[in-house]
Amino acid sequence: MFKIMLIEDDASLFREIRDRLSQWSYDVHGISNFSNVMQEFTAVKPDLVIIDIQLPKFDGFHWCRMIRAHSSVPIIFLSSRDHPTDMVMSMQLGADDFVQKPFHFDVLIAKIQATLRRAYDYNTEAVSLRTWCGATVDYEKNTVTNERGCIELTKNEIFILKQLLEQKNRIITREELIQNLWNDERFISDNTLTVNVNRLRKKLETIDLGRMIETKVGQGYIAIEEGTP
Image 1: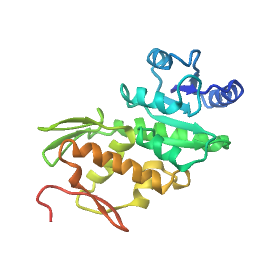
Image 2: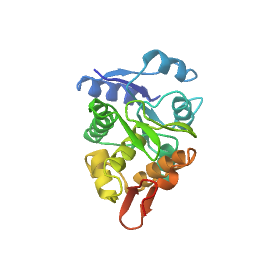
Image 3: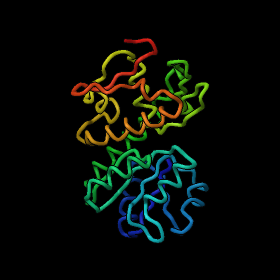
């Protein structure tokens, strides 16, 4: 049974989501003190976090930053705000998905299932390590390590990198990435993919690998090896 931490201050909505998720055999935990979210997060050790943007004390962006400083657990944002910058901000902070209120419960379930699937299922594959441009990519630890250092990636970022590395030197279209990453492209925006790839490349730049992920305008992305034309 997956444990989900639902950080939502609307008691009525919390109960509705908790009860519906319980019907799908999810173990849902709430927050009793919105000043000590991290303390409760550490105690629960959830497999996934669903978090509202507008919260007492500090907003959801603040708690996303705090969680990401200590964990790569999947995060889904909920929000009644409809400004595009909210979605972009959530992705830049390391969230895995974004759900706009009001939402149809089937959409929320689909996003939860897809997020958990890509966060945990692929780690059961036999191949967990791959070498790339002198670096070691660890699919289980979500890390990329070379002589310049070690970076930790989010579940989305390691999945995107894995898709590119499994077909090195071949252009992977944006549509193909979206389909593989989210399984159903109706539930994700093209812009969200851009944010995730840009964030991945920025992290890779810190160990001098950002240039090895190239954007092919109008086509997609390609992971290249050193010495490849």
